[in-house]
Length: 230
Image 1: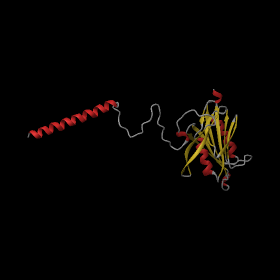
Image 2 (image 1 turned 30 degrees about the horizontal axis):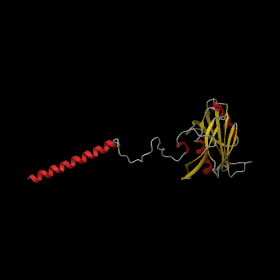
Image 3 (image 1 turned 90 degrees about the vertical axis):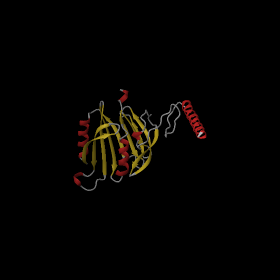
Image 4 (image 1 turned 120 degrees about the horizontal axis):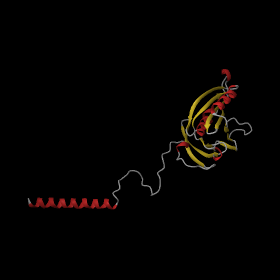
């Protein structure tokens, strides 16, 4: 009986020593919780998970001409795309375009992005952005009237990821249902503080799946900024 008591006392003492050792160790480490995430050096920020689109990147000031890479979904497949940032204070826009598919032609009052595969003198696939001092309603009426002479048109409200609410006009070169449309246009009319922005994507039916989607991704990167720093 005495031997059993002694064994119990020894076991209890060892348990107490082990517990004290563990508590002492926690005190030295600042009682920090164990985490499954990797520990980053002090002062660093864990990057957010990418959603595969330019708009999902960390918002920060990009310089005109700055280049970066992201991923888009094209024809059901994730595709890496290299973008160049555009800032035009006279028009009042910031946006990103796919510089491996398009060539940028920049003017004070116009940004134009031509397909690398097109004749620069007679392009078929291109996107152009201009500023208009007129309000959205007036610009929409004017653009619709001009397009309706040659195209069947559909006008609707839409949302762009960075520019917000705007008007979109879908135009196809199939007047009065006469044959298959060979030419397509998608025109966005976007409100600005002192007028409107007009972005028109021109492309052919054959390139609608490829260039049409690329134009859509580019448009969703467009932001409206103060013109001339006003």
